[in-house]
Image (cartoon, rainbow, N blue to C red):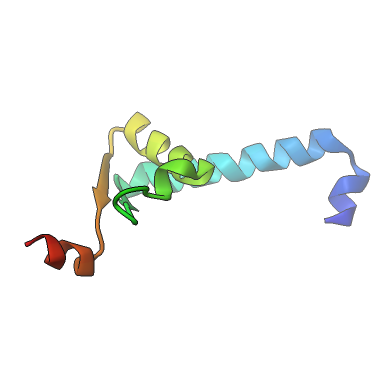
Length: 78
């Protein structure tokens, strides 16, 4: 990491863009993303930037975004 810092912020930004593009390609090919919506009264996934990025990329590429509860929580609802 120190070697990257020596080249300055422009290189660091460029490398992050390459990494993000790679993640988007993976998401594009999976076609589906599942978010665990726990706890139900205040799910954590929609508050996390990375989860929002994944959900957004999934929808942009025509994939399906699904929110689920844990199996234990689901059984309590039945």
